[in-house]
Length: 363
Image 1 (cartoon, rainbow, N blue to C red):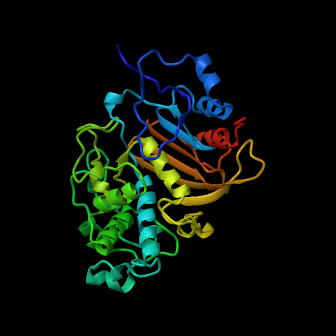
Image 2: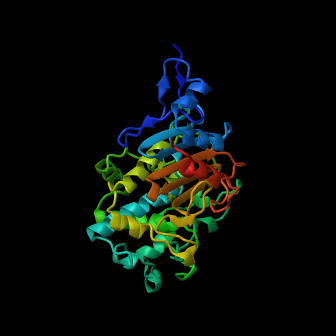
Image 3: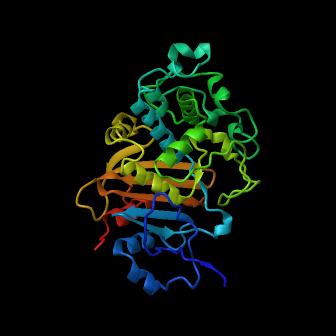
């Protein structure tokens, strides 16, 4: 019998199981009808699915009130269940850094050269761990590497790249503002390796196993398959992002990571709140993510949102954690013309879906 995906827009709710990947669930019969689907899920899940729309070009999963809801699933399972997490990888790196802060092997305001040898020319103005986390390092920026014929910085294609490139020269001093820079997190990955004695990918997956999370993929060379919409002709080599944006995983893996942060399996409450303490002077940037209060339609008061976004080529990623509601929403798309909009804009896609997901009636 031909199996078909049971995952459709606003799919029926299933119990969340952090240790088990939920992607590519099948039914041996036809998927439920629209009437059956709407009868089987709480109203807010239907509202969120409607807010996404049938043409949403990606995967979306909501966790709320102890339940996980597949709101949308893109494509067929043989396309691969994994997506590039893009800069949500930085949220993971920040979590690993805070684990080492808890263990006493790292200090947020210690100079990075305390843990990782920097070239002599950089030691007079070396960044702290906190400054790396908040993009205040002044390191070389991969975005400034020469563009190739596809308009891609050579750092991410066929040119020089990696830790040595990031540390080989420096044009700017540490800044009181901030400049987004993937080298900051490539260096942080090397710092984590130096203080733990483990390769970054091995450290990550050991800590994930300890938290009952599925292992992640951090390719050391250009991936060849298993990623949605990515093939050998893709102009960007995702592996060149390393710890800054190179993680691969499913959207339900992302929700499982969010849940592990919420329930204390990755960090203590104190360490997590330190990571989520944002700076209004830096646009409400915290450590590896942005944290701010947001007015949402249907909620009586502003809601605290932890946001991590990312993009690589046509891939766009949004990961939202809503701590006081014990909720999370993860969405990944592959569409150059799609726009999540700014979360703080009331008429944006992100704001509309968050309003339905967090403030919708679950009765």
